[in-house]
Image (tube, rainbow, N blue to C red):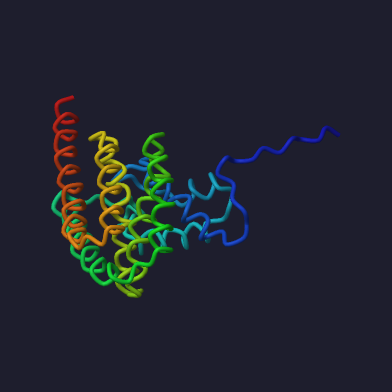
Length: 232
């Protein structure tokens, strides 16, 4: 009897914490643009890709919906969320408001150790910018911002900000790709860290400006892209 060689899907996951691992994998695929806005996610197809039953897929979908990345529609099932320009800008404005506020509370409490941690994360982020490693940029961008806020000891505010960052992550990645904004982001983050190290309170206003500018640049790029797509 000839033994058949078993093939494995490239999306095969460890069985431990399967729904969480599945949600994380799908989240990254949404954020990196593999799943487009408005695209349906079919439970059966996802289960087949990951070689699992539909039960963990349903749980993963619930986690993604709670994060605002997909929405369940009648007769369509799970669909990657599509946000109009006004709502995208609203998310950036919320970020600007909350992150500048928490930075006020964190600013005077930042220790040398806190700033050293931020500097270490920024080095990794700058390396990801240089390599145009969008997936790492997304995670490290949030890690850098978060490192500046932990000293505030405001866990509820930080949790809300993290949720908004999950929703804006794909747009931040898209903004960098559409606008070639890596150098601007690199320069802004270096200035933010330097201002914190120098105890320059103007960093609060600059942080707000940094986030709002990123949102506006994204909307301009999206408008041009949509006009180009419509013309084709």
